[in-house]
Image (cartoon, rainbow, N blue to C red; front, side):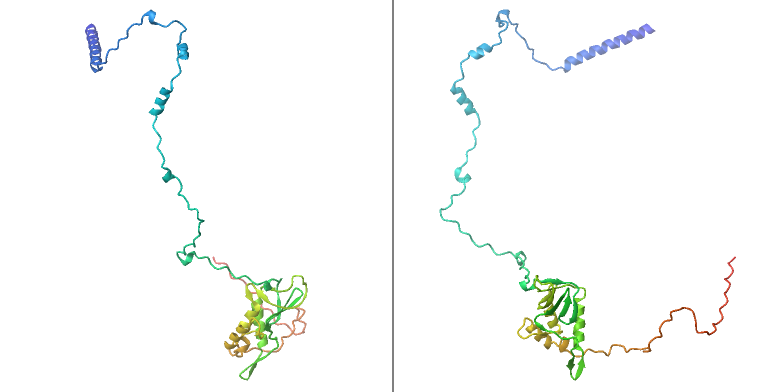
Length: 288
């Protein structure tokens, strides 16, 4: 039984090998047969001969061959000089024309900011103290604002038969304007003290102009603030207006007598019997 199985397996193996061989011949394409003729011994070059000598003894290549090689190369494109060259300019000089107008007003440059004149260059005064509307003192300087007639702090004004203290009102308004500010006055830089009547400013505001336009000073005749003073007079501002309305101010109430001076001791030395002390109260019992 085992011999029969072994023979059957051998037969199957031989059949598979035969099929593989036959299939390879069928799949392989028909290729042309290449035959090589044998070389005779006498046709072989002698030993050590590599052909360099023949190459060195060969005549140089003629120019005809070189021309032929050059002609074989592709030719480069030609450039028209009339198109590539810059246009010919006339001998006349160039003329500059005016630029075109702007497309809109947004492209226009803003005008420069006005600069302060040379009169504004001076000395900075810190923490000025005003004694009248237009008169300040600071740093060993006493300055009166130029171009105005100062309204004294004790001056009074009349309006329809009523008198009111316009000088104090002007001084209060001027002190409110200067509160916490430094001013610059046209004091010569070489001066370190003295009295001066010059123009002053606070920031970019002319102090003399502010006093006149609000009616807290009179403009001098022919001065720089004459027109401003006329407008303040027409508008009844400051000293040109009426007396301030004090009806809304509440009257003073309470006793006007002076309070007794405080005692220097906390002990009662009058000799009177003190009221009995209040007995202490026991705290409530805690909640159970």
